[in-house]
Length: 279
Image (cartoon, rainbow, N blue to C red; front, side):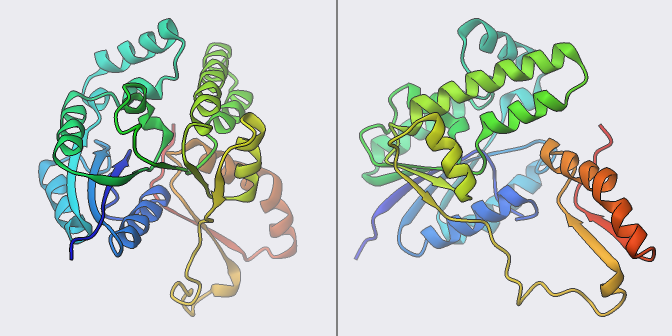
């Protein structure tokens, strides 16, 4: 007996599952594959899965969960396209991310899947893919969207932390545009999946009377156990600093908390694990 078909659209290619978003997306895809025949269209980032062999290997690694296709994010291969996307955002009054994930090959593959298959629902891994909803694609199907964060809130916080006036002003502008997308689409989605109660409350404050469910991130504490050496004198920070909230959190810890820890326990060591960026 054939299983119901699910269309899975993702802003990341979650293999290997080596970062927060990719870990969650990987396990979500794995769990959905138990109940559905999954057809997944995934974007991949140049810096994380940039070589053709890496992309092919990632697709093969995920193939046991469904029918997987991978697509490059166009602006990551063209600085001209990146600047054009910022310009289009300013002129149109729409969030910059709407244009980041606007790709002809992705759109063509999506239309082909919708024409050739009868899906029971659509799973969006990010509201960043709203450009395809704008075109009316799949709007006749139930749509579930995962909000890994309330992105407008993160942008607002980043703007407040920026010391550059021009950058601070532009990020604040993008925060308002992103909040506009959240307000518009949260009420049209059949279900908004949030990762925390705080995020759910924030999204509901932006757009009341929406359907939300909280599915928190988690860690298997039975599996992930520290080794024996120096466990009691080490604090681990897990998360790359390429992502601003992680870097901001690590800086806050180092400046505001670590001095008190060192005062009480001078021998304590800090280990940061993840992709590090000095920018």
